[in-house]
Image (cartoon, rainbow, N blue to C red; front, side, top):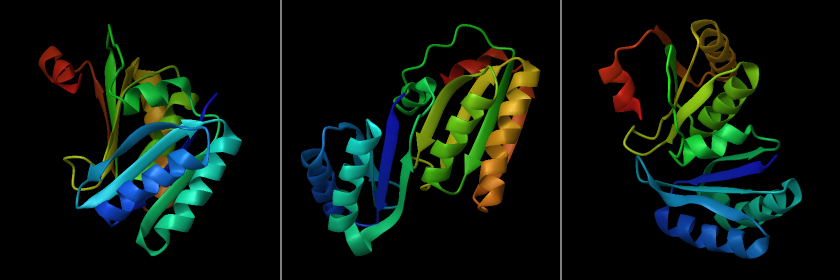
Length: 181
C-alpha cells in the first residue's frame, strides 16, 4: 500500500517552488500540484512512507509560514488515488453517499476511512477546486455498506469539526448518478 503526503499553502508562487523541492528531495510521485480555491496551492505526493516523509519535511521547511495544512497518511486504500485522479470506473449503483468537509486533508482521511470500513466504491475525492476550498467524497455500493462508510467518514470530520454535511441516497436516479461520473 502507498502513502500519501499533502501540503496546502496560501501562496501559489511558494506552492510551485515547494512542489519542485519536494519532488527533488525524495523518490515520490507527484499526484497533484495546482492552484485551488480560494487562491491557495495544493501539493499531493505518493510513494513509500520513508520517501513521502522526507519529501514532506523538505516541503514544510521550504513552505514554512505559507503552510495552511499538511498530511501524512500511510497505507492508503487502493481506491483512494484513483478517486482523487477521477479515474474510477463504476458499472452499477444501488446507493450513493456524499461526505462534505471544510478541510481538504479531512476529505482525504475521511475517504480512506470510508473505503476501509465497508465494501463500497469511491467515485471521486474532490479537493478544493471549484468548491471554495472544501473537499468532498462521493461513493457508491449497497445501501447498508454506503451507510456504514458514510458514518465512518462523517465521524472523522465530526471529531475535528470539519464535517459540513453527509447524505446517503438509496436508488439515485440514473440522471443524477451519471452526472457524478
